[in-house]
Length: 177
Image (cartoon, rainbow, N blue to C red; front, side, top):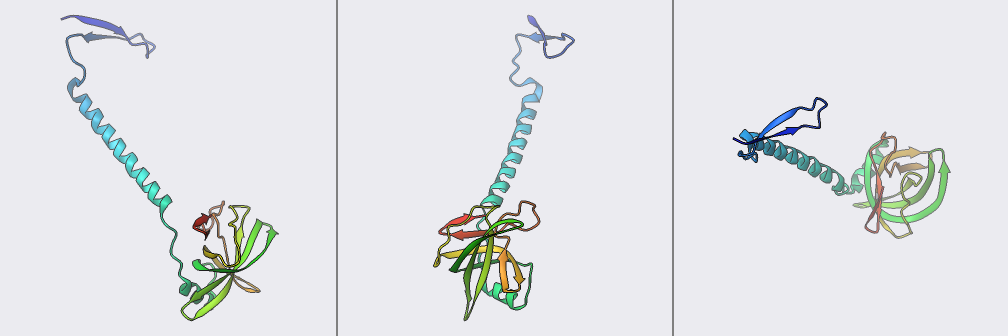
């Protein structure tokens, strides 16, 4: 039976390997089947991870619940994550504070027979400033808080320190985080 000697240069000991030239090595004693099973398992795991990532990244924003927001405001429930939908009734000048430049505006929040102007402050040092105009329909997600003037929605952006759930401002079909 003819054979060839091959020197394995990948090792430092110049190992030699006798190779039988008459034998087919496309499926040496089931190793190929094992390799294919491991490869299939790896590809399946990768596909599952990729699918989960895509679902997490592409989920639609949560729906607005103006009734809940108005109830939370009436109960003075600060710290709750809220999603509101309404019309921009006033765009205020930007303000600069300790955490950066903020775009400020007031949204008319309506539910059933109730309505309330809600002050929104969006840190545009962290995210892109949405191009707001009076009359724009917006959806805003943020954290409900209260100051001396009344209720407000802040953290309408991603928090770089990861202390708050990410918020957003949606206007004109574009999401600003």
